[in-house]
Length: 67
Image 1 (cartoon, helix red, strand yellow):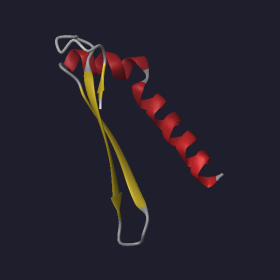
Image 2 (cartoon, one colour):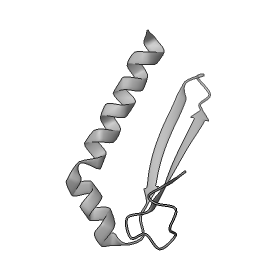
Image 3 (tube, helix red, strand yellow):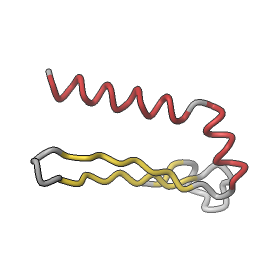
Image 4 (cartoon, one colour):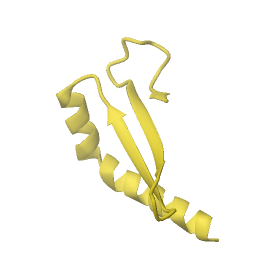
């Protein structure tokens, strides 16, 4: 999934990939990856709190699935 404006030259545009992999024990591993146009932009997103927000999103998903 692409995030940002429709302009492919948008310097803030990035791609998010989410994968679900089933393990032998029946559990699923969810992996979220972001691909940014530059190291600088990646670092800006990390500094903004993207990792923490991602963890909050996964915690919310866990709560939803357990509900």
